[in-house]
View 1: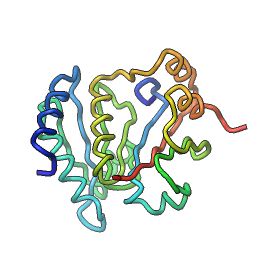
View 2: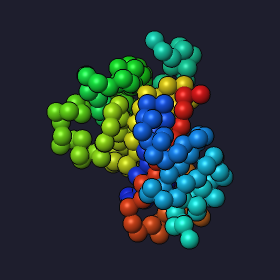
View 3: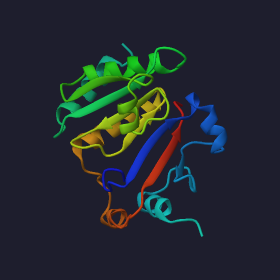
Length: 59
Length: 140
């Protein structure tokens, strides 16, 4: 996604090293994706579903 | 050596075949960073595998300019740069399964192509505001 859009930035974060982030984003399982601190996607989804959820602001 | 010789060979072949070179910027500090030494060892070993990869170390404490330019707010961190900076970063020690994620990111940056479907690319082409994805993982 980051390769496709200059506006998208992708960070992989190893949860083990950053307990502060694990607490802040309430990471109880992996993979968990947090988008703009708003949208949360738990688990691995099929590509298109993932992309569309990641880019859809929560209602 | 952290990688098995047969894995090294496979990784080397994939890296050598990349159309673009990949620069790894490794952000680190010598004191008060538990994972920095381990992460440094792993990136050094990866970078050694192919001439397509280069590795530069950035001092997180002293080199404020680069730290800000690449949006790194904690260490250890790796910025993975292809023909351009796609905004791909790895934070933490890329151990276990996470090494595979790092390697995937390197391949992606070196190809400069997402491999995403036309529908996904259309959605991404319509993005108009800065979007930050943080993907949390563990080594196991």
